[in-house]
Image (cartoon, rainbow, N blue to C red; front, side, top):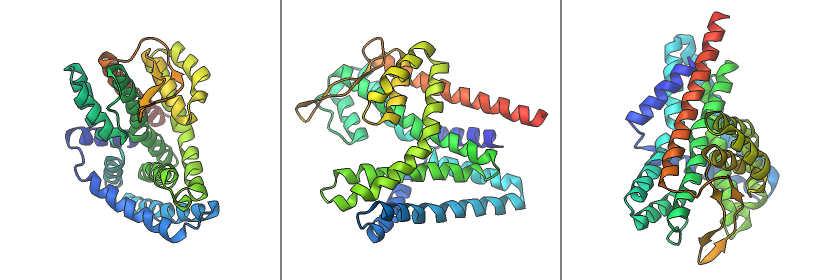
Length: 317
């Protein structure tokens, strides 16, 4: 059932993208800000309490609703899984920007591509040249495809496998990701330490735990559907150099699978922003952007085929 729920959610998102996702984001932002406002006293333990109180009621609610629907009829539980996947898997969230940047690069509209990349990243990109735009766009796509698709799939399948309903797993992963971004990553840029600092430490640690297995499965998939030897080499020798080691695994393995060079120094704020070099091979361009799309889709198909084989094995067993 989990396989068919994933296929249904992917098709639904492709043919009818969720136009109201920004409203869900606004509601979720208000929800987590409530816990930050009332529990943030600048200590790690306060962040732990706030994280638990923010996540566990939603998780419990989804589990209870799944069990109720399943007791009525499994089809209702299946439809609920599809709905939650539809809300949590955001393929179009990143493919929209990527497609438009790729089109602009193909047509030689560098300024337009820079503007779109700025909107996507939230970081000024007007100083980047064509190769740097392609390089950074591929990096953003690799990370976004994992966190909006593959990470969600892993936790959906894990919860489904133990009979807890995949919806709860998908929700747990996306909540963990959202809380890290709000309480840890964005908090670090606030002038007041209470908005980040120790309070966001537990959100960062919790997401590291949630991310550990999915990141490595995604990197392994890149190796299988891409250049295996280069992926393994880049993962082993380069990933740890990246400031965020988990993102480094994704970028190094993706670069190796594609045969492209990522990372490296880029201009930011009229100054050079030093970044480690990842990957082997040629400089990034519009053709490699198209190759990145192919890598992501091959990975999705690989996972669906693997789930199909596991489903058949369980039915025959």
